[in-house]
Amino acid sequence: MERRLVTLKCELTSTGVRLEVFIMMKYFEATTSDKGILKQEILRQVVYQRAEELMVFKEAVPLQNMDTLEFKMTLPKVTRFTPEQVAEGALANFQMMEWFETSGTMKKEQVRILVTDEAKARMQADIQTQKSIEAAARGLAWSKDTDICTVLKAGYGDTHAAPYTWANAASQDIVNDLATAIESILTNTYLTESDLTNMKLFYPMGLWGHLQKPLGTSTPNQTMVGYVNDKYAVQFIGTRQLSTEALLIINSPETCFHATYTGASIPTSEEQRLPGVGNQYILTQYYKTFVMPEAENGTTNRRIYKITAVNS
Image 1: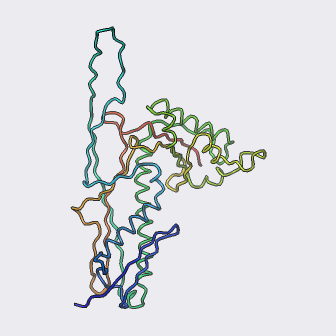
Image 2 (image 1 turned 90 degrees about the vertical axis):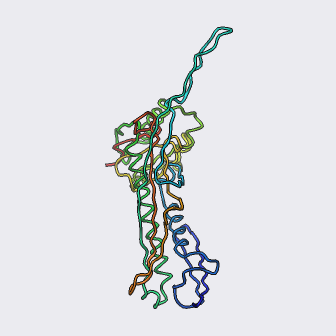
Image 3 (image 1 turned 60 degrees about the vertical axis):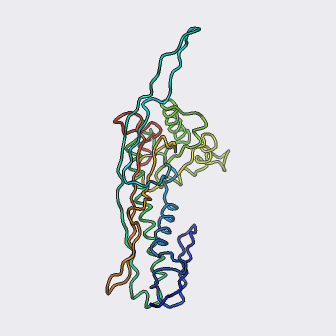
């Protein structure tokens, strides 16, 4: 069998994925490089890395890899023991830690990339592959962002409606909305002031221009985003996943996490020849976003706060 030397060079850039295919023969047909790396595995890694780069809600939750499709956790029912004042020679009562269990199952998503025989004949296989990778990465990033956003919107611990939409509100009104949200999180959770450095505010992307307006003629270089970030250390993140509400989130393992399957039992990248058509690459990913419940049979977390009616 003829051996063809192939070198694949993959580079992630801020504007996209550059997949440069250098082949000593003319065609995009080799199955391994000179180092024995499978092409489908390279494609999988590039798509996954690019998708994570494009994800907006990766800033909201920790991303974790898991080797199983199901996960079960044992969580404490209390987060603090209360000490007792005792007399000399006496002992405090025992305080037993009580636990509850919670679990979840990952969902499966898949994308197929096709490199046609005609693209090979026209010497355009590398272009077709590059564009397919970028499209697959964008789709996976959107799907994972949707999953995280949907779970967070359902898992909020407290909420209030903004009295004015943020496009029409005065600067002080927006600050008041955020102050109310922060007050709720600090009052109802065991957080310190230092934990607030992980606060992220996700808002509808269409409001970006309004939030970048100067606060006033006396401070033409100070915007709402800059002011709140300076005073509260809140990072503003616009997203197309939200339309009328905003989410204030403490990015912490105690709030929520997004798990991705990375085990070896299931092939997550495969190559297959389609007779008369070309080569297809099947990329599969299992993932799940999970809110850490604060009580047995609970589904919410008070480190997640929702502000409704911020946009019309």
